[in-house]
Length: 63
Image 1 (tube, one colour):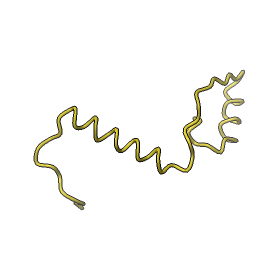
Image 2 (cartoon, helix red, strand yellow; image 1 turned 90 degrees about the vertical axis):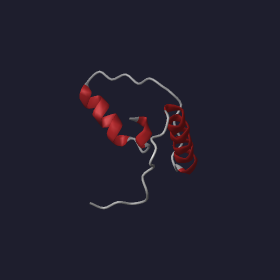
Image 3 (cartoon, helix red, strand yellow; image 1 turned 180 degrees about the vertical axis):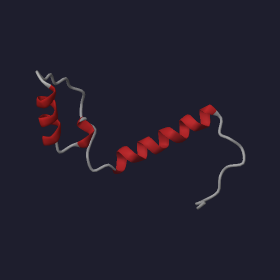
Image 4 (tube, helix red, strand yellow; image 1 turned 90 degrees about the horizontal axis):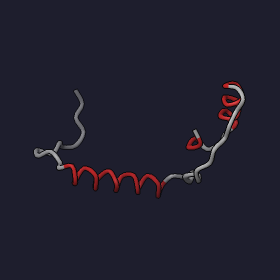
């Protein structure tokens, strides 16, 4: 088994875990080359129409 780094001896409290997750998410948004899109609704008549639209998207965060 490969181990990288050290595991904390004491488990994080729920509050600490939320703070850590928030920092990680903020950093991911900061370094992401693709910005998070604003919310929107798209309707399709068929599943195939949806698949075609999804395949044509350049931003992976849209689906």
